[in-house]
Structure formats: C-alpha cells, structure tokens
Length: 307
Ligand code: ASP
Image 1 (tube, rainbow, N blue to C red):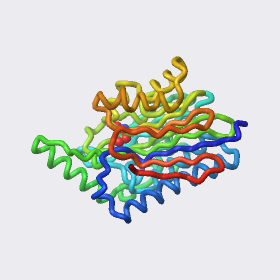
Image 2: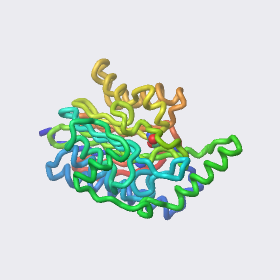
Image 3: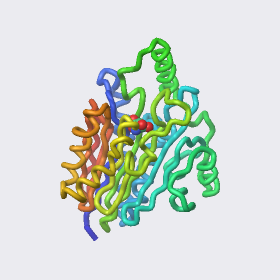
C-alpha cells in the first residue's frame, strides 16, 4: 500500500475568454469538476482501483453538458456527433478504445467494455456500439446529447469556413474530458473522452482514443491529454512523457512540462494534460490560456481551477 491516492481531471483546454465566462457558468464549471473529483475519490478512499476511479470521474464529466464529451459533445461538419474515448490500466497495460461512436450514454464505459469484453484494443462506429449493447450499457437518443451551444458553434464554424476563415476561439472548436489516478496500491489508470473538434470531417479520429497519444497508463505514469489532437498523435505526447521518465529519469513534472511546452507548443499543439505518477504526484500543465482542471490527494481538500 502506498497510503496515498491521487486523482487529477480535466474538462478541456483552450482560449477560455474571461468575458465569455459568466459567473453562473464559472460556478457550474467548478461544480461539475468537483462532482467528478468526488465520484472518483470516493472509490480511491475506500481502497478501490485507479481504473474504477477514472471511469467514474469521466462518467460524471460526460454527464455534464458543459464539457465536450458524452452529453454536450460537439458536432461534425455533417451535423452529427462522433465520440472517441479510451481507458487504460497501468499495472497490466490493458486498454480499450472506441472511435466514431454514437449512442452509449457514456462512451468511456464503451471503451472499458472493449477492454474487458473483447480481445481487441480499439473498435469503431457501429461495431463499437454493438459491444456496448452486448455489455448492457445504457443508450440515449440524439435529443439527450444535443446542446444549443454546440450546435451554434458548428453554425459559426461553418459560416467562417465558407468565408475562408477559422475561429480563433479554440474553446469553441474543441474540448475533452479526462482523468488519471493512483490508487492506494500504487496502481495507475487513465481515461479520456471527447466529441472531438467542432466541424471535424465525418470519420476523423483525434488523439483521445490513440493509446500513447491522448491516453496512456503504465507502471510509471498515467496521462490524459486535451488539445490539438493531430499534433498529440504526431508527437506521441503521452508516450513521450512515460519514455522521458523511464529512460531519462525525469520527474513527472519535468517530463510533462517538457512535452507540453517544448514539444507540443512550438508545433501548433495547443492544449494541456493531466498526469500522475505511482507516488501520487500530479502534474497539470497547459500551454493554452486556460484548462478546466482539478485534483485531489488523500487527506487533502479537492482543488479546481480554470486559468
Ligand atoms: N484532443 C481532442 C481531439 O483532437 C480535442 C480536445 O481535446 O480539445 O479530438
């Protein structure tokens, strides 16, 4: 027993303009992050696994329409929602991922069903939904996932695109939710879930379900990313952090900072990530203006922040 548990979460990174953040939305955002921290830390406090804790925390974030995952996911250029999610257990490197998914209320539970109920790591579209169905997971209609805010963001993106422009507000274009945890046994897990980027091409898959890019857990660290997915994939962002710790002996903080500020930032990779190591240290670096985030460690009060 390491006697210490830690849980860190994010609800997406981007240009979160203070002028757009009304006191009501700000309060609701902190409350949503706190609910997720409570859902995950209750499991860790009782001696539960990091895997169960990150699943519970991400489910809570998916259920909150303020964040771009599950309910409240962004729309593709065709006006549909295609969700990506992944979960990974550090101790044995088991992993499950889904891409282009629509239907299951909690895509992260579908990813976990792939991990636990199939011999595969990644499943897409209808075949992924079928695994969720066979696992008995709850499904929802399109009206459950719809939010006016995300629909309006799509119309704005399409109008800009028609004029040959792109939105400067990254928070409107994307977002993601994620969680990483270290349990009382020192085991690590990571989970990430997203609707992707507003106006993405149908069929586009981001970094979230790509193990080693947006999601990774091994015996050294667990990482969940948010940001410009294509860059996270091209630089293998999460795996790079684990490799720096393993081969260079860097601390979690140093490795995570290096990847966010020196690998991603100079290469058009705006965003951030949350990470935890097996000693319960947490890192929450980002190179964008803000990142919805929070963490809690055993015996301490939970902390949430936006900027
Ligand atoms: N990384 C996500 C994606 O590219 C989006 C985000 O986190 O903002 O799908």
